[in-house]
Image 1 (cartoon, rainbow, N blue to C red):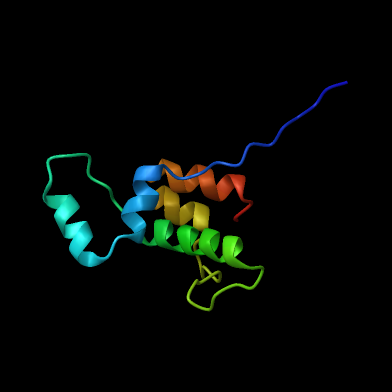
Image 2: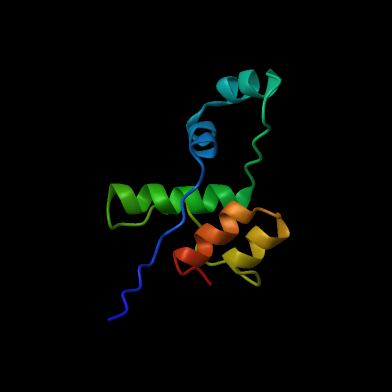
Length: 94
């Protein structure tokens, strides 16, 4: 019997912590000599999706699931964000 486990990808704790910071905290972090964290639109959309999924089954109106001519995976690829790309693929985004 073959058992296949599907492992859902997750963002790094570093990116999650940075995402919840306000502008002043982000500026303070950015001024430190440490790893730079780049949050693009693809990151924000995916993190908002994850937050809404965690809070309830109802989606927040702030997330744009109508990607127009580009899918979420294409947005993540264009931003060169491997974390966003693997997360979007593991969650079944187009």
